[in-house]
Length: 245
Length: 242
Image (cartoon, rainbow over all chains, first blue to last red; front, side, top):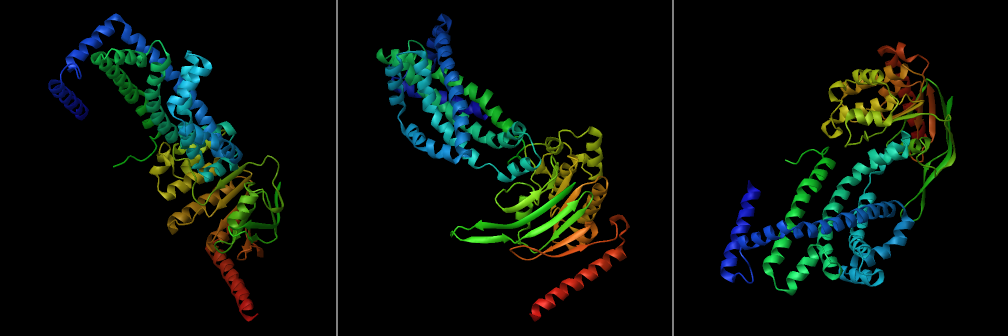
């Protein structure tokens, strides 16, 4: 209910602002809606959204799994931490644009280059978060698992993984938002489809309704994925914690 | 089957770069069905010794010979349960081979039946300690190590849990090592008592208790305690003189 109220407040503000500024710069909600409907009925909207979502999914899964593995290793093994740390700092501070442009130059304007570039941008934050999580692991529970001779996999699954779950959830949450932002830049610079490409076209034509139509649909999809996938995962990972008052 | 402990020394490096002796030479052994009790002042190195005996700390001088493939059941000072797993899962994860009947029996003895599906965060410390006991017994250990399992519990509950430990220890031939501050616990549960000195710990006295555990009545226990008190006071007097 509260969410609905907050959303209608946003719509109202937008509408009033549109009346003041004028349709060319800020089209009113119905104008944008009609563009969304037109794009949806032609199928273009779904094509571009689908392409973007596929890239997000691939890059996200790639970066999360690789980043979690490297982060865990760096948290556990001191040598790996020493060796990896300078690379990590470099990657963390490398602008997304540099990575994307270099990837396109070295690997051509290909799908693989785009996905790799997006994944590389997300990778270091996943590593840092998981490394912190691994460092915070409770040694006393490790000892318990050792004393009771738990096999490695069982200990990892029941002792280690639940301790890492909040870090994985945090890394997924922040990582997903990062990927959403970067995927559009990668598409704008070197892909013939996707929401980023469409926004690039709209920018060149100064077509604000089209620009808003694509970005808002995109935002809606992000919102749905966040509430339908990320939040339930977080709730499940932390269900054993006593509830906050 | 025996547990042979022969530690010749253990030193820690402190932050200043110096070394600190934690354990002096210590030698003892335990046979099946025997309960050894380690009694000593706080911070004398008991926990360090336990970690060495359990194989958690390979950095020491000497040898610890555990029977090959000995299953270890451990009750840590703090319960060390997995907060994200239910009581039953906590026990089953440590003891995957435990049968349903055995588990029910354990939960019944320790009065945990009502808490099977609770999470450790929902339990009181006394209950959590009982879960830790259930976990240690469920693995049907060859070596059972109890590190102050009754500390910080009220007398009535501690007494009941102590009786439960005695019942469980009697039910199978297991080498038990109990660490405690309480002379009462030591006399009621132990077969042999090892008194430890302050750091670096060494065994100052080894006292066997001749009367079998189940025939020890209140009168016998009081007598043993009295004679032990005399002894320790005698030691103290000696030290004061010297």
